[in-house]
Length: 401
Figure 1 (cartoon, rainbow, N blue to C red):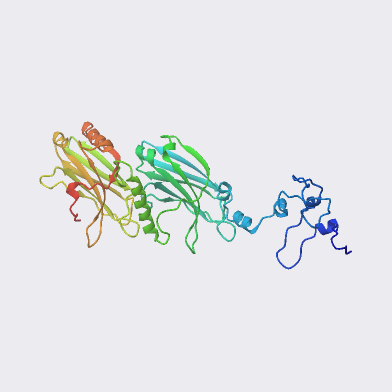
Figure 2 (figure 1 turned 60 degrees about the horizontal axis):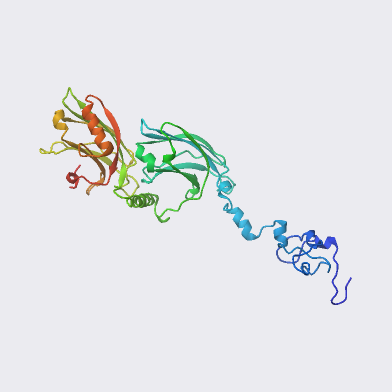
């Protein structure tokens, strides 16, 4: 029925509930409550509002119909689909245990399970695995990785990953980065989320349980276009640059496990080169070809040099070699043992990775290890030592192999 010009027309409830089917996007259904009597805050009682409502009724002016219905705009839907609305539920949670064994200088990481991971594949699932890094440090050198669990958002690993050569100093200033990634055989692996745990939260010989929500990735300074090897080196150099900003800090280049024992029967010092851990990568493939040299200074006759075999393409080599220096205990007390680690290169000078000196002029653990060896004859003492970028003066010349 048509009304006269200027008259308001009443519309029945069926028309209020109808969907606008005109060409174009489907619009949300109007709420019936828009046409209920409602006084507005103004003196006119809420104004005209919607032109289809009776003259004595005022529609709600508090929010648009789409908001009242809870409908999502395209921008809202994109926000939900991108899992950015709430990281604590979108990325998932990770459950793991950490144990610092002070006696053996090891950090045990038990990766248990994850729940509610973000889907990464077209089937709505993921192929997750976990990576561990110790920061600051060479990314390639100290990376540990679990197996991949296929087609699941709630993977169970129950795997134990172990770091060797962890000292009390590491516990005070290093951070364990735990990343959950999705393995993709056809393209590059995708990042899901990460957790960073300061090791100072751990107490020696006490297992600590964690169940933490994954967080967004902290961007790396290295360009994404770099190869994996170059990204590892770039990450390593960037972290060391930050570490060098502190006063009196030397660049850390890895760890070495040494065994010292003075044999009273043979009248000499027995030096054991056991293994290295987390060495700096010196080659473009992200690895090194390390070997170890030892000197007993001062070396007047230049006969104190010993050298291990070269271990190819590794940052965690095991040597298990021993060298003997025949010398009286009283004379040994005035000597300094210099241990240097080198990267073997064919056709050019070998690269210096790091070194440590043990003797009366050393500091910290290096000096204590030396003095304990002299005070406890016939006892093999194994200790981990930090390799630094400080090149011993006598080792400055290009080495020969």
